[in-house]
Image (cartoon, rainbow over all chains, first blue to last red; front, top):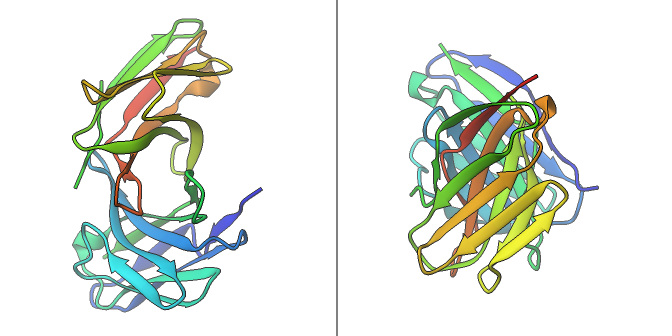
Length: 112
Length: 111
């Protein structure tokens, strides 16, 4: 089975802190994604990566950056956390010839 | 951008009843997928229907797709309390690498 893991289930940070969310997948998938999920808004795509060191902006990239130095790992970075970034963050991966996305368990981030 | 819009936003039924959720989308798609999310967890893939298919079954799940109306429905038959979750449709749009998700339907199945 595909396994996507995220470094933390719950995280509490202060405004202005730099925050790193880590995601690791074990199926050698080329594509990896970061979404944020907010009540009533569903999942919104922040960034995705289709290869090592390659990245593309999603629909809401402002305030975020990403890093993909190894194929299995995709990091989401909040350079200076703000309260409006309090949300559930979901990582997903997908093989290049596959249809299905596999999700991690999510990180619930609270910015105080 | 939010492509899929689910309807209703919330649904409460009794165990044993059928649950129907609808999804509408706006652009050309390769396939449409349904995912389930238990409270506070990640999403799990349920079923996929391709643009040239009209209906698909998997166990107690039945999905239909009408590309002329740009809509899909997910039917869960003989629901169980364990079906309580949020259900999301996701579209695989032509030329876009990532799936686009709707806002979801919260299903509550009362025992």
